[in-house]
Image (tube, rainbow, N blue to C red; front, side):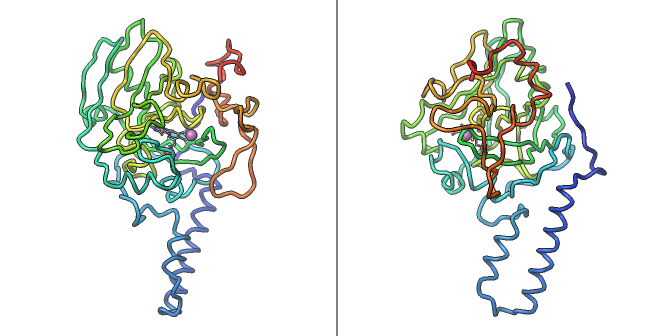
Length: 327
Ligand SMILES: Nc1nc2c(c(=O)[nH]1)N[C@H]1C(S)=C(S)[C@@H](COP(=O)(O)O)O[C@H]1N2
Ligand SMILES: [Mo]
C-alpha cells in the first residue's frame, strides 16, 4: 500500500497560497491598526475573524505545544480548515448534542491523569498511564480529510501515532479479529452523559486489518498542540476513510475480540448506521443523500469522494464485500 510522503522542503501549492494570504492579511491588519489608532471600534473583532489560522485562540484552552513530531508525514493538497472551526464545530455528545457547545462545556474537563486499559485477546494486557502508552512512539503529523455522516467535512492536521505500532506492542493473539474502543464514562465530568441520548459509554470498533492499516492513527493533538477537550482529549481515533462517528474520542480502553463489536450508533439505530461506515457517495443515508458534502468554510457543496479520497489505499480491504450491504 502506498503512503505518499511529502517532505517539509516540498510544500503544497495550496499551503503556499494560504500562507501568503495569511501574511498579507496580518500586514493589512497591522497597517490599518497603526493608521486608525482606535478610530475603528470593530478592529478587535475583525482581527479575530481573519486570524483563524493562529492557534493562540483566546476562547479555548490552547493546549500545550507538542514538540519533536515528524511534520507532514501524510498530507492532502487542499487548504486546512481553520483551527477555530475545527475546535468550535464539534460532535461530542458526552458534553452536548449542539455543535458549538462542546467547546464551552468541556472547557474545564481535565484529561490528566489518564489511563488506558488493554484487554481481551492479547499476550500483554494491562493498564497504562497515557504517558507510558505513548512514550515508545514517534509522533507524526497527518493531514487528513474528515467527513461526518451528516454531510459536512473538514481538513485537519492531526498529530498522532499509527495504531498499528501501538497494537503490535501488546501482541494480539490469533483470536483477535477486532479491536473495540470505549470512551470514558464519568457523568460528573461529562455532563452530557446524564441524559440518555446514547447508550453510554460510547463504543466503536475496527476490524483488525482496518486497525492495522497505515492510515489509521490514534491522535493526541491537532495543529501542533495537544488535543483540545472538545476534540477528544487526550486520545482519539482517526480513520480518515470512514464517517466521523467511527473516530471515537477520549479513549479509555482497547479490547481485542473475536466477535464484531456493536458500535454505539449501530446499537442506537441499526437501520441508519452500520459497523463499517466507509464514506461512500453511492450509498445514501436513509434520510439524506451522501453524494455531496459541505466543506466547512466553503459555500458550494463538493462531491463526496469514495472512501473519502483514500480509495486507492483502502479499497483492497473490502475487495470481497458488497459495499452497499455493509454500510
Ligand atoms: N465519544 C464520542 N466520540 C465521538 C463522538 C461523540 O459524540 N462521542 N462523535 C463522533 C462524530 S459523529 C464525529 S463527526 C466526530 C467529530 O469529531 P470533531 O468534533 O473532533 O470534529 O467525533 C466522533 N467521535
Ligand atoms: Mo459525525
